[in-house]
Image 1 (tube, rainbow, N blue to C red):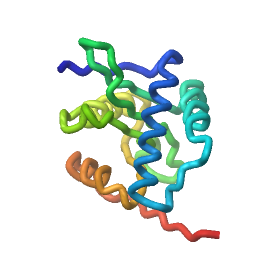
Image 2: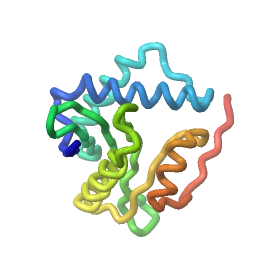
Image 3: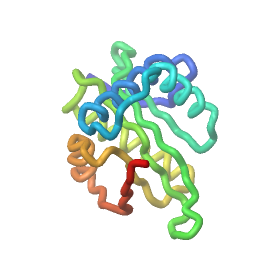
Image 4: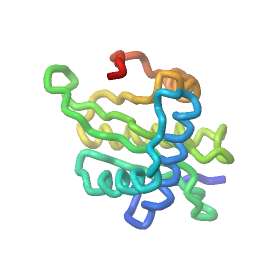
Length: 157
């Protein structure tokens, strides 16, 4: 199977929103602190549409070149780290590969394309954010050479 990657388009909103909703549901399954909202489908559609309209967001879609079937997505935000060098960072907020396409290095392909996009936009560092209990994400990013940069703690109010 040959995988290609392209920018997400308006026509992709439904399929991308579905993949991101599945990711958020998986996060909920792995960590009860990430309880999804009741209107998850609507929220993910809005999230994808808003992302498409933002100059600081890049969304890439991996698809099977033979069939055209979407198989994975990555979303990153370009952020100014006002006080630090390198000043610009890319933040991977979402990366998802459909279950039947996993273990085929598609996430790695998406990550490589995300790194290319980050460099094009002036980022000197790329980071990933995900729930602390997502052992799948943890293992993936460690395999890819990511190191801990910042720790986020929370306190319910």
